[in-house]
Image (cartoon, rainbow, N blue to C red):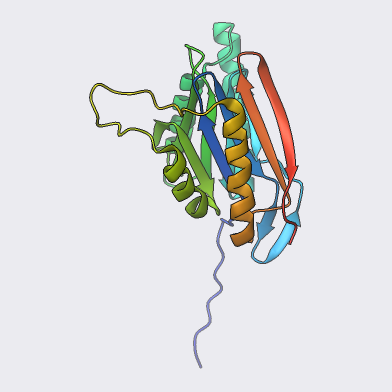
Length: 223
């Protein structure tokens, strides 16, 4: 008789895709609203995007229970920062805080794959991309989640940033206008939804610029 063993995992992958693009004076962060497990759709209307500060927005895919726990920790740390410094945290400071928070849990990590977008001190768009244990990099664009393997090559083709090894260093911002960036994000998700079963239902787009923050929505395939 073969020995049977029950395997239980503290993690699940609820799928979904996130994209962020930084421009000269704006940042676009987008994700779909489908949350799945295995071949089942749990909900078609779950936002993966949270505003952490006035000029910082995070989109996360992976295990949504861990994502929610991470969001709560970051919100609490930001509230403490506001009480101590009497100001909102900047996007580069929030990027470092997110890295530290993920690294602190590196032996039992948050199973979340994050992109942080916003505006820096000069009002330029900035995007930070992460792995699950806090290694991060400032880039011009990034994609995370189940559809990232489909979207990243397309973004590379359209927006390839100069190498960070080039001297003098060049800005990691894309040459597109805000409207062009939004159209590119829409195209990315329409394409990824055709091939990835974990991406779909609805697209949520958050646009940050000097005049504030706004949200746009677009319907995607529901099958």
